[in-house]
Every structure is written in structure tokens, then in C-alpha cells.
Image (cartoon, rainbow, N blue to C red; front, side, top):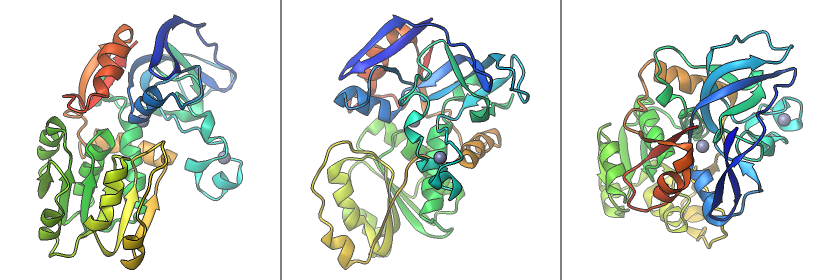
Amino acid sequence: MKAALYEGKETIRIVDIPKPIPKADEVLVKIKYAGICGSDLEGYKTGLYPVPVVMGHEACGVIEEFGPNVKKWKVGDRVVINPVMPCGKCYWCLKGYTNICEAEFEGFGLFKNGGFTEYASVPASSLVPLPDTIPDKHGTVYDQIATGLLAVREGPFITGESAVVLGLGTIGQFLMQILKISGARKLIVIEKNKHRLEVAKKFNPDVALNKTIIGKVKGATERRGADFVFECTGRPAAINATSSLVRKGGTVVQVGVSDTPFEISYLPFIMNHNKIQCVYAYHQKDFEYAVELVAKKLIDPEPIVTKIISLDDIVEEGFQEAIKPDTKEIKIIVEP
Ligand SMILES: [Zn+2]
Ligand SMILES: [Zn+2]
């Protein structure tokens, strides 16, 4: 079967690999779509991720076959794959932190082959049904919504508080929508890409800025700064700016990922008694709830999924396009 194989910095090749055979507890999914994620782009740009691997951890498809121990599913079921596959037995899983399971690096499309190919064989327990009311093209966004749900919960963000969302890639866009339905009293979004900012404006944030203007954030928060800052860019300058955007005693939730070390000034955070909460991935319940929120039309992926491309075009029209700073796209999904 055809697959896009990541082989290091700026190297992805279309190759032929064997079609997987499902093990006893596994299900063979014919991939319908797989989304290109910010972390895939990071791996593509830096070459830091283990190789070779078929990326694509945001995937949906149709069940074609399954192992003898699988009872819950049938051929033809439409499913979404939860790429976080915790072992359920380690210290962290038993403590409830399945997002930081010892086996986290065995996840689908990260260190094991993912969805930029025609078929994937995955544990039956990692599948979530895709309701009939949700079209296939909205089948790949649950990893990003679930990340936002965990970030909001771990804050913990409370109704009536103010929030800044810094960076409106897919996760920032969904985080903004989640904060809306979570009762953010004042919602401020910051994104320098004008296309992404326009999409965010459709959801009526209180303030939308095309760069970090501390005075405007202070002006919208009675000169105090925001109760919460959700940092979704992972860029050093933006991370450093959070200390000027958050109020004294407020919380910065670090969602964006940066692979390279950088200098950060901690003194303002210390002097202002701030809390910095980093978040990683999500739990199964977040993933299931993410699907439910879209089914209930409380979260809308329509303006976020901006382009569908074929597997053959994954480099030129996918990765190369998505890394452009002024790209018109937010989420590009691949049809194998
Ligand atoms: Zn992702
Ligand atoms: Zn575990």
C-alpha cells in the first residue's frame, strides 16, 4: 500500500509498504482522512523525531477487518483513531495520568506508523465511533479539540474569568471555541496571520489582535491583565510575553511546543506569583467528549479544516504550504 514515509529533516517520500494484518485485539481501519499536525511540521522542519515513520496521528476511517478478540466493532463502522494509547498498567496510568503514560512514545503516527497511508491496524480500545451526523472531513480534529479540553480543565479555567489565546493554529482556534462555551467573560485572541485571525473573528472574541499589544490586553482587563493566558505558539518571544499579559496571581497554560532551548525571564512570573501549567495530550474521556461536542454542534470544525489534498501531494501542497508564515490554510487534511 502507498504511504508517506518521514525519513528526517524535510524528507518525506511516497513509498510502498506492506498492508498491516490486525493482531488478536486489533482493528484494520481503511484511512479516509489524516490531518497534518503542528507537531508533524515541527518534525519535518527540525528532523528531530525518530525515523523512519509514517506520520499522521489525526486520522479517521472505516473498519475493514478485525482480530478474533474484537467484539465491539463491525465491518463498515466509521471510526476516529485516538492516537494516545496508554498501557493502563504503569504508575502514571494507575494515578489517572494516562496522557503521560510510560508508553506515550508508542503512540500512533508519532513513533509507530500513523495515518498518512491507506490502512492502519490499531488496538480496538483506541477507536471512537464517528456519529452519522459528522461528515468524514470533520473526522480528524478530535486530537486538537481534546488537547484544548485538557488545557482548559487543568488550568483550571472557571466561568467568568478572562483569557488570552496566543496563537490561532488549529489548537488555538478550538481552544477559543472551548473557552466561549466555558463562559469566558472576556476573550482576547492574538495571531499575526491575518487569514487565521479572520477565521477566529467568526466566533466573536471580545478582542482580536494581529500582534501582542500589552496595552490593549490590559485595557480589556481593567488594567490588571488576563486571569488566564493560553500560549499556543511555542515561540520563545510569545512565551516570554505571557508574563506581561497575565494578571498578578494569574495562570499561564503552556500548550504550544518548542523543540529548541531558549532563554526565559522567570523573575516577572515569580514577583507576580503566577502559576505556569504545562499540558501534554489528553485522556480518552477528552477525546470522546471532543467528538460529542462536534456532534452537538457546540464546536464547529467547518472553518478550521481549510484544505483536502491527496497523499501524492502531501509534501508540496501539505507540509510546504503549512509551514509558510502567511499560509491561508489552518488544517490541511490528506486523503490517501
Ligand atoms: Zn495533532
Ligand atoms: Zn501507562
